[in-house]
Image (cartoon, rainbow, N blue to C red; front, side, top):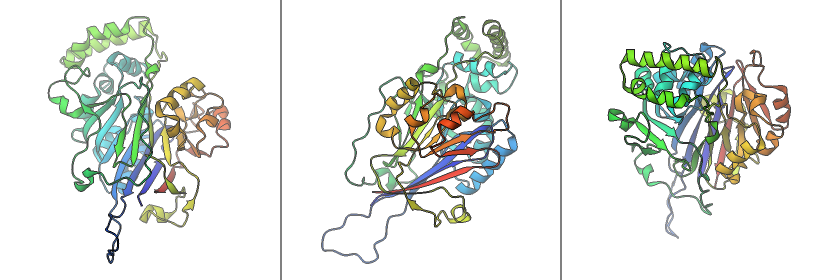
Amino acid sequence: MTKIRAVHRFFPVGQGLFATGSVESWPPLPKRPRNIKYAGQTRPAPVGPYRWVYDCGSSSGKRLVTNAIADLKRDSGGARIDLLTLSHFHNDHISGVVELLGEIGAKTVMLPWAPLWHRLLIGFEQGLRAEDPELSFYVDPVQYFIQEAGDGFEHVLFVMPSNDDGPPFPTEPTAAPEPSEDLDDPDKPSVPGESVSYGDLEWAYGHLDHRIRMLRSGKAIVIHGVWEFLPYNDPATEPDDPFGFASKVESYRGALLNGNEDERQSALDNLRTLYETAFGRGAAMNNVSLMLYGGAVGPWTGQRICDCECLYHRLIGVCGCWKEHETRGAILLTGDGNLESSAKWGSLEGYLDARRARRVSVFQVAHHGAQANWHDGLAALVAPKISVFSSDPACSYGHPHAEVLRDFWTFGPIQVDQQSGFSFRICLER
């Protein structure tokens, strides 16, 4: 029998998002010849845990993120995060990332790929000025992480636009999977994606090549052969460019990516002026947001869940609240993704494959429950067991909006704010 235990957790960061979790698995007992008995045969040690984080930020207060990072550090014993995913480049989703990398670190930082001109539009839209240090993140995220986090990360993985049919759904296994060969050497490095060479990405050059990787459309990150993370970078998020902003950015590419400080500053000043003239201050852009599906590979039985916050779970990982339940076990994180129409959901569902989408138990409602990123009837299409709203209802944005909350009212709505977090544990057996 193969066993998986997965944890999904949302920290109380108010108007922002900081989700994390872990996956560990127990491989089946080794096969033994018939009529031969072994005394004291025990189950192999668990593989993992594989730890992940999705976004790390808040606009409700830096203290909230700092406390959550300290909490995560205690839970993980200081071990590095295996996969840190940033959905997009807004401050309430990334304000704590540098602190997280400094305090805990990450093996892989996964980002949605967006061209340089699109990233600069997002940065300018947030009100960043040419002299603001944070704008460096939008110019060159890899160099920014190197400068701010040093060796707090190992690789950056860019997810290309998901404009293909989507990953093939793996053949449904009829028996427990055999342990991966990689499990014989737990220290063997496993880096998702493929390496890039000069020209594959705009900043992949020289000594940085070994720290940059690419995940092409249709590819998933498979964990120990029993769990998968499948990102979705909506190809429709690239904005229109009626003013030729992209070509202007292209003319400054050398100064932005390879120039000295004065050349870079001059280029940013000129581009900021062009942005204000062409788009106006505070123009709304079609912002990219990397969605992330995480779920077990293949069908599983013996499913149990627990969503309590008791002390036993915090100390030893078990309690008496485990219960048999019809649960699918998967989580779907949407960041500030745009699901404003049934067609938008249909594109996401089609990319994931409907069989994956039907397994979603925990759904993070997009953009903190904003009406603009939702459409009436979305909840019934997703049909999760639990719908998480990570927002600060006291904030001026008024998230979650009443219309969205009503739509998800019969799908286990959970409010995560400054005071209340949420944890969900799943045990799967086959």
